[in-house]
Image: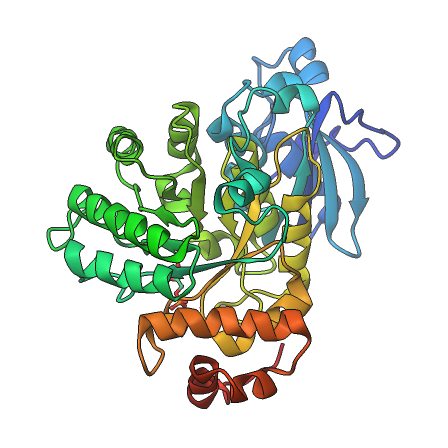
Length: 419
Ligand code: 3PG
């Protein structure tokens, strides 16, 4: 490959105006970092591997991306993209620019999109969260207390029929859960058709609400082909549902945009199944933070961001950074409620709260339905773990007077804790 094909993209003194440029930050490894950085800028804007007879100065001068920061030692490069190269309101096109061909180029050994910023006027093309964290708190009635929300994923993740599913959901709500959701791989299989599941679960929710005097939420997983998702979202709305869930990565950002743009008026709970295919290798892919920003931009209201103390690889620093970004002001978009999910049991709750605070939906699947005395006791144990933390009482001491928590401690208290 001739070296100078990628020359001219380096602009070390350039200070991009954040109101006019999309700015992307990458971590990368390459034999020749200056050449690779320019190759990234070229391929993600106007360039390719050879000179072009069709290239016009007006195109190159106006639309080429600019490498404005390059730290070869740390392997960090920051690139500015003129806003004109982005079609408004089009996330797939955004990704085809800043996160497209570049990951597979021979010039780079590894490449990771670590963060990006966008001009406010570009953000205006996206709807953002319709309800957001504050809206969900108002729905459940926790705006004043600011306590975390407690949730569960019905388990086993697939296999229960709609009646069994509703019974498990009811037990979870009755035991103290605010929120019940389907699992990521439950859609509308023969053993649990979507419509019947939703109708039965919503009946169970009504019953739990009138018995407990608390407001509850159910997030049926609508993930499917795009038109079918819209149909399912509509079905949930028509039957009095108060949330929908989408597997945002497997469904795709365009599909998520379609759901959000339909203005269903229900909070969107975003599960991130498959995100680790992009984000787990710390040197390559797309980090969870940029994925979370895209989800917020499109308009999810609750987003799985990592449990820190759970079963999935979710480094504390990274999760806290993402939660911080999701809940702080950004481009005028409503804050998103971070969800800690995956491998949480009641005994892990105090530590999680110490680390991550209370602006959190704490979801436990196995950690509730695996309780020795079943789902209702598991949900109660989760709430008791919070109460112990809230009152500043050590969990073991609180458990002496709270049977469900005591049983949870007996079952899970010895799980390793290296966070
Ligand atoms: C999720 O949706 O995050 C997982 O299904 C959580 O399940 P678990 O609490 O049993 O790990």
